[in-house]
Length: 556
Image (cartoon, rainbow, N blue to C red):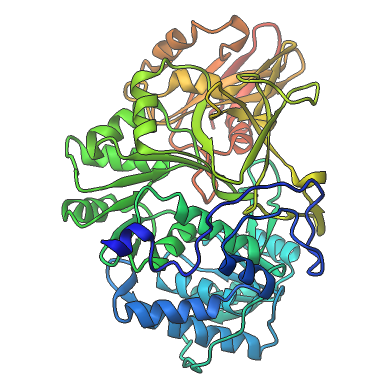
């Protein structure tokens, strides 16, 4: 029990972080970090000499040996095998000339290879550029141009596609190299360590650049904020793309000797079998995944799960009620972004339950308090700091944040003094919690008014016989834009209930049309793409503009 309480298995643990500097971030290895950390002596040594990814992984293998680190439900990868395959891949990449700061792409579905490839690349000091398995050739080519990588670790199934755009595939099926048995030196702290691509919902994806030092700091902060410390035998179930949020929790679980169950997508039959086994300690389920699990569970209850991690999208009161009925009050809300990995803010299970059961509903989604070392500012239209409950754009600064963005081939560091303008709309309440109310890019301008579509969507959540509802807009010469509500797999009469729900809003916030589609357009991360939905509406409907605009479906 002593090991579990003290977090043994994590070689280094961030004890306290206090940002004090005010100058811009830098990627110059000769410049000190823009934050003056209060760290343990060992952490200070790590910052000065580099990040010892290789020796850390060797320690995990020596400690946990043949214990299962990762499984896809059919195959297992032990800690010894994880260490061996990662070091073998690192040796192959270094022989090909890959070194610190250079970039290597990965194009892998959820599975064992995605995990050991990720570990292997960071052992070399290179920057991994994880690509979502659902990326098209055009998206892969765009990402390769941004991040400047040539080698892509992938499967045979995508090899010819990669060669066609002049990339060099290194396929995992044919990879039989052996671990050379050496421990690699620490990698430079300020070298590029990972490039994360944005979802692309508002245009071409951008690349968020992380240094190895910031990757390491983020991993320690995430472990320090866990609601309980994993141990050998602790099992976490994940099914979202490893290239995003699942990777962070995998690193955290493995650092403590736990077991990661990484499914390739939301297979509810397999999920239910695992939950019924009573062996699952935690589940990572963003709202879209949580909704699918809730629909499949019916009235079943799984009391053995200690925490349901959720984030990436707003959690509605209706969905929380369903999750609570299935798992109990164990849902934990976190906020992270491509540009700044978790934890930005956290709302623990007790606080989440109190929020949804005791607090009066207000506009926006509460995502909790900033993690230690994370600073949040709210900027209004006058570009000044707002007070408590004053809405505006969310700015943030954090020790685990990316150093800047690559856009169309050029690197753009974050704002002076290290602030990142998130594009999120939000406010800080009197208790210091962050509430998100929408995206600046999604704000609809109609008839001289600004309307936040998230406010309307919140009222339309949970309509009987209706899936997800998205509020978007289409351009109008008369109004500027008109508001349209689109439901997924909606039954007859949903429009009547929807209109009744929005009647409490000001007239200019009412949708001008209520439409139905079989499925809403989503990106590879599962987020609804409002821009693509607008294109779908215009392609399938005739639009008559004017003081009383109308939309009618086209017929072939």
